[in-house]
Length: 177
Image (cartoon, rainbow, N blue to C red; front, side, top):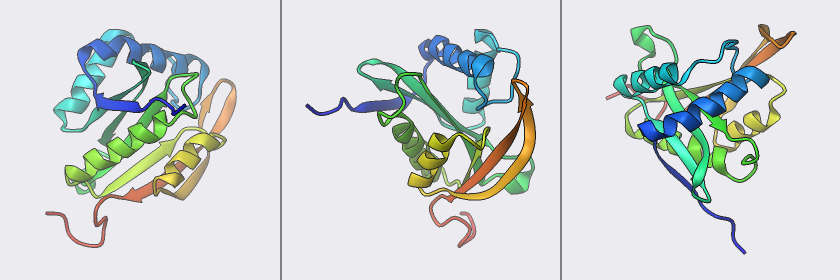
């Protein structure tokens, strides 16, 4: 019996309740984000629209016909000199980890950003002990470029932040088009 394929597609407005619910869980219980207050669905909608308006991809994964996670790219920094560099964000629904959802989302995000002419992708992993996220990024060509010790604080503890980098297309080997 083969595993069901993960379907990755562009996020649509009807996905926002599931996206907001997954993110709320991470804000309340996790440390992948250092946000403390759960944004409501209207705020999540505003954020989704802002990502799209800036020309970045926002994707959803389905497994067995149900929402399994989401991913998007955004600006790494706002200064013009960083315009060829994106930051990735990937969240996988609890109970769906280890089934290829994160890999499918991140690979689709890499492919989409590369097609849009971006040259570098940065992963900012909000907890140095998140070995699954670090391993996922390593499998898809990222390398660790820095660890910021105690950079954030959540749930009563200081958290290390891992920064990873992956070239897109020729990366920094040649000027952008």
